[in-house]
Image (cartoon, rainbow, N blue to C red; front, side, top):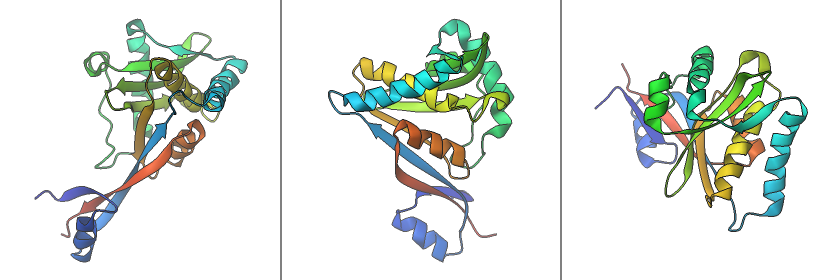
Length: 197
């Protein structure tokens, strides 16, 4: 058995381990966004409003292409140290080759041609899952994370997707707030438990 276990907070085994002296070293969460079929026009209008706010501030928000992978990898490298690292949320290096391997679709925001925000999603048969979202340090707190995430939901909703998933570390309050603004609701909490030494 490993020295660290990641279990849902409501898993009875988590309580047993805690009673046995295992301690919580990190917490994380999962969230879902469900659109109706057809989606509620008010939900779509709210999402468009998040994109429009960024556009009104001078940002170009749109889906990226394979030619943008070097810029995505560069932004990810520049923000990698900002991702909380926990047993459940460790972020691997996202190189150009890794982005191609993942097969993600990326949605970004540019300022004067420079990519300053990105979200990457992977569409599955059951749900579209967010792989990562990042914003350049000098462009944070301007609604760009919500804008690119809203753009991804709108594009995939147009293709018939109705269920979206995401998650993150509990210490990243900004990520939790951003996802709530897009419409995600937390559906599960996870505990990273470490064996007593």
